Image (cartoon, rainbow, N blue to C red; front, side):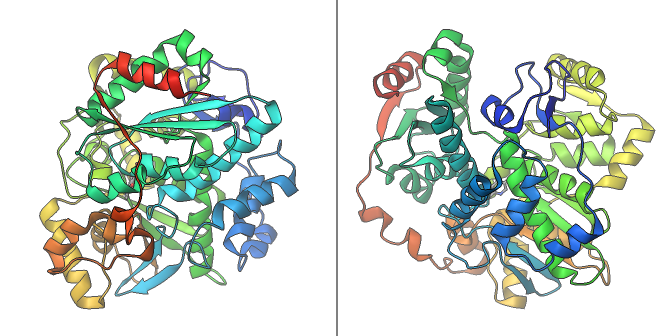
Length: 461
Ligand SMILES: *Cc1c(COP(=O)(O)O)cnc(C)c1O
């Protein structure tokens, strides 16, 4: 399988090259050149497979330059860190099914992709003899999942910037209690946006970027999307043992997770029906589907902070398909968007978008009400992100079709909002207990490019 850019500016490259490239060098996003066809026999064989076995088989359709035995080993190691034997169990609660994606080391769904990406990076760097210094800024979840993805790995150092005292206490501890030699936490006296701006400046400093082999772990890496495709297929086949369709509801920010569902549906069109795109008040994507307008709004802070996003970094991948793989047009639209902050879609395109996604924007009041009502009805505690998806799923329920709601975080990660909804704090899983007594390591710096650059230079591989 070869990979191309949504903007058409690169010659086709292999999977390994696509992983190391991250963002395409022409500014676009990487996608497989074509979508594999999955035969009925293959689907039959997939039913009942364990999660790691299925992950290997699905990924093999998209990866032909890593030997099967090596890929199996990478996948097995990536999911052996999950504490549930099924890796991503699906439980029926009330009228919906909840797919629990939070049994990885940092208790959020990003582990599913970043445990795998960390292992793939290490494998490829060993093969090439190169090294990498990962640099990123986080508002909480991505940073800890990335740190846990590469802690202790050879040939990789990771530098994660978070805004000092502006992430939750648990999120801060999840990052700073990782004291492996290759992990460097930087807390800056500033905001998440300051951190992101510094990272962007350093990635644009080409001599610096090349000298230190800077790498990124944001959700534009194709390997992350690919790892996420697997759980859609796993749960769809699990709930349709012989035949039939399922719907999914996905709490979305960057369009990454729901785009993985879109790819899964291309592989299994006979099993996956509706994709419900659920957002919080940051409703860029619901406005896109409902009004045919993709336009920047102001970021609102909510109780589901990992979806407080007004620029969906994976949107361009869907746009490319919406334009029937016309890279020229995709490039033109993205250029227009960067100038005007706005894209408009024709009536025909709007009809197509609405046939591919249902939507729901769920405000904070409704989110807390969903947590509370769901708890009363089923005794099950939802985190606020998951509650946004469950609210969307309940609104789109259809008789006879299982609705699978993706649970993207364990409720204890967002305990304050949960306590407000149900009147008591959620139970702490053992991995979070006693964190406050552990040794921590973190460098506090000003929100200043020079200070960050110096710190990275001193500690880079
Ligand atoms: C990142 C995140 C999301 C949003 O995922 P996208 O891929 O950006 O759509 C939802 N919930 C939680 C808990 C997250 O960490």
